[in-house]
Image (cartoon, rainbow, N blue to C red; front, side, top):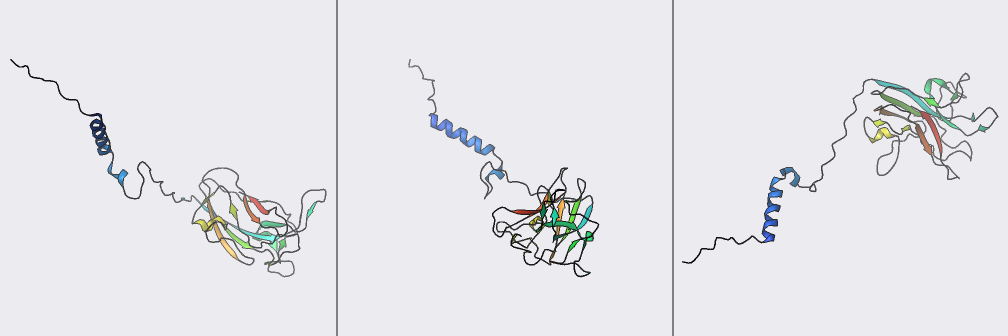
Length: 212
């Protein structure tokens, strides 16, 4: 009597690998295969719009103002500073403006400090009262200015950045112009508003600086 052969022919290794691959792809969620997104890449969420606990406002101007570096008499004759608008008066006329602005007699040039709490928004109404032309050959050639704060969140758009970089539109202010910048305080810390200006003859940049 002939014995029946009950042993089974083993599957080829390639067939086993193809079967495992099929099970793997069937187990993946459908959104992984969405058009336009590489497999395994999760798109970044859109940044949340800041919610302001309070909205503060500061009226700030930039002006040409000589100042002393120290009590020994080191002077910056072609200096540029930020100041609160209420602390500035005209030189030869009652109404100050570009090239006709100076600090009040009872005010000294010093870094401008603006304070806000975490969760607050600050709107800076900025006026550029720098002279239309450099005061002398030692002053910077750039007469446009802005308030650019490193480390704070922009509330509206890139127009709140006070910059002119890349393919973005300029958010700088020409002499005599006015612009509003709104910032959001996401966390505690000191932040430095500043405006870097291109020098006329030297490579080193000069800044108008302040503090938040």
